[in-house]
Length: 190
Image (cartoon, rainbow, N blue to C red; front, side, top):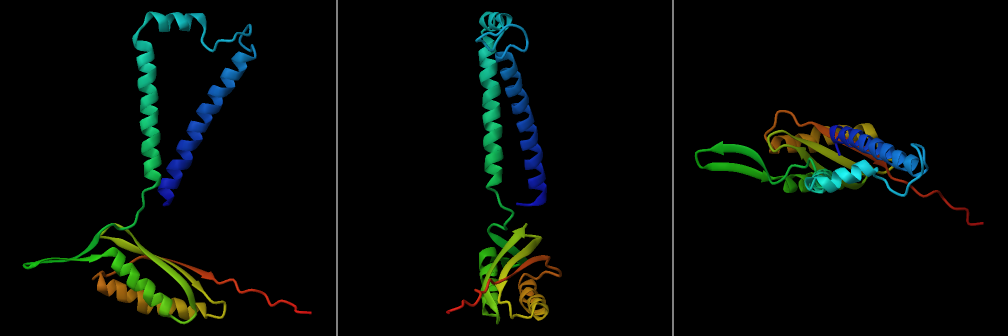
């Protein structure tokens, strides 16, 4: 999830939480008699008369709740979204047609190349962004004995450079997360 989406989620959930907390506190205070005598009803008699006299009131309440449900569902569906490049990457237009490369094929090739490097235990890559302006995300688990500086140089100058050439890009932004493999500590056998 990107930072912008995370910020919107935190803000929206904070606002919804505060509104629900205030509504719950008001309902509890009313039930405990903070606004006069204790009653078993949440609505005042005037509110009940208003609802009974205006047929549209409950329809408006239902419409408002329906809008809240639709907003909630759209927010929930947005959480499942991804910024991965879908489909193909546009490489070239020519008189004979269009050249496209499947994003999955490109990342599979990079992942295979990474896993073949010495010291790499696991690797996972994705292309994110748009088909016209992709960026590469790389997660690599390496052995503790691997020289990180030389690995980074090999990754930048060979693996990422080869992908940039294949995609015919002048510049390919990349986010690389290196993780050192957990090696089990030796056990005492005595």
